Image 1 (cartoon, one colour):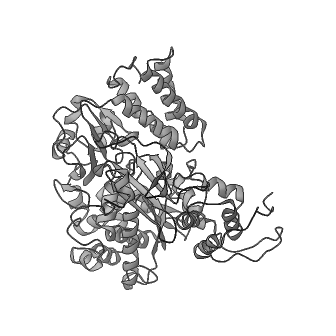
Image 2: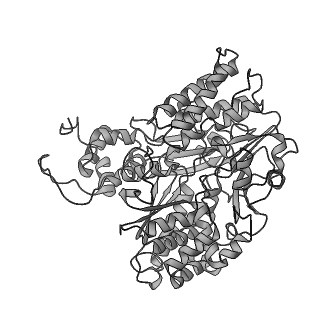
Image 3: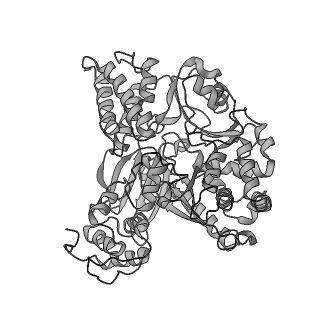
Length: 590
């Protein structure tokens, strides 16, 4: 079946796009002849993006030609192309607007519920689709626009749909960034030009890389471990343990991966770092590479972050031309380089092993663990994978020292933490505060009402907090003891007039749509959870629906392959326990 000819040839425009993306077609060789050489399947997602950007969709003919060039089975490539929300396998308008209807945007006074349709703007067909969170919660309501063709572009805008399509608001203002304590991670944002390597260095940039090269790998590993740095993406795994495991591997080929696929509803802190201080990420990844013995790194960035993608790509290019990346990093004789790969609209790819599959050209489905990425990661090799915020702490630790880093925060949660605060607040933005800052102190900084209707901590995968939880210190240990979660640092505030039932229903729809479907507990459980909440809100609950929600939560948490299923019921259960769902019967769900 795979040897069957396609129904037709790609168009000249598609041929030109493919030539630029993956080169010319291989010579025809009998399918029974085995070829040896590098596997080019990892080019599949970038090539699909190039087709989408250049032509507007991925036709069967173009996909078949791409499969021939990359030697990928057509059925598998079609499965990849249809996995992502930002890729289209059916012809449609060249301009598509993705209108956010997630938890922060839908409570904004200017929000208008989007409906999937094809309309016209100045006589040009436009596709309009509702979208999950675009990571622009501080600028809500948000729209992400894709325009295909030779003059194609991608941009994020705020305000009205008509204004977004005209490009109004496409020049994104810098996120509001506030520090209450050491501005270790945010101090250069709004101060140094993010496009200037010279300004970055004038504000302390690349001191840490010089120190790392002088100290040597063993001393750097010891300093990272002594600092107590833990992952800032939600798992809170000790960074030093992860780095040392990869450095100690017997396999020489290793990778550094930055997880910049920030897709948790309510979260936008990594966007602020990527847009405002991109060279810091390049320096951090370079330090990681020369420390653990990796020669290649990847930044996997979410597809809805065009400005962040452009800035990090430009920073990589300037660092390379400045001798800080490539075959001889800063004159050390060590090799390390970085490549940017764009996601395509799949929340699940924020899970580290799903991200690896996506980078390798497969569907973004999580892998079972063990083995862990430090043993078998990207391309089957030992891999360090950290998120943006975690990596930005590395230069701080090396320049200030592990002891100074530990002097801020608490013993188990040292350093500072970034929180994305949005919703019904006067000053939505990114807040850098020392670990141990109380929740009510953080809310006061953002101008939250004295008595909000509800606060969601940790994003869609987090929990609603009780009115008396304001005095909880924001640390890994304290929120755990209070049965809460920091997650990725999202804090969404809802005013007293918000229909929390609508918010909870949207959260259940989000997990229903974003489940990759690989494992039954999550694939079925997220659908049943959403159906049950819809029934409860409509007043048509079935007998035993409260118990059903409990059972679904337990099964998804215990038996799902990855964190999406483990946390898909967290917000629902907390809302029911706190009695936040207006007019919903029950409330005893755990």
